[in-house]
Image (cartoon, rainbow, N blue to C red; front, side, top):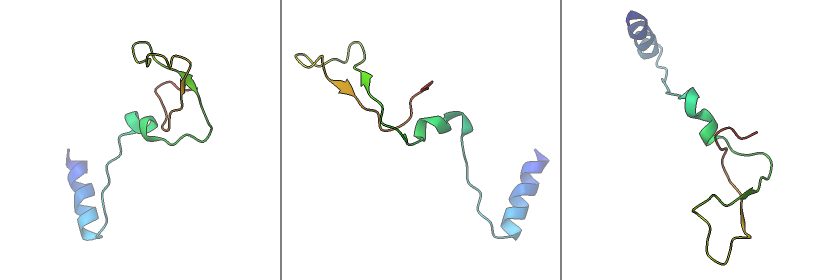
Amino acid sequence: MSYIRVIFGLTTCLDLKIEKLNVKTLFLHEELEEEIYMQQSEGFEEPDNEYLVCSPKKSLYELK
């Protein structure tokens, strides 16, 4: 715990910013570079529009 106090002390003395980053969920906020299409999920199909596909704008869990 004392190392955290040292880091806070240094950032205060050097007038730096501390930013928080959650690496475990970083992939959820990543913009997609390629265009991807996927089928509508079960239970979320629109009646009379079952032929439509989805195009996600952000990365999905376990997206290859």
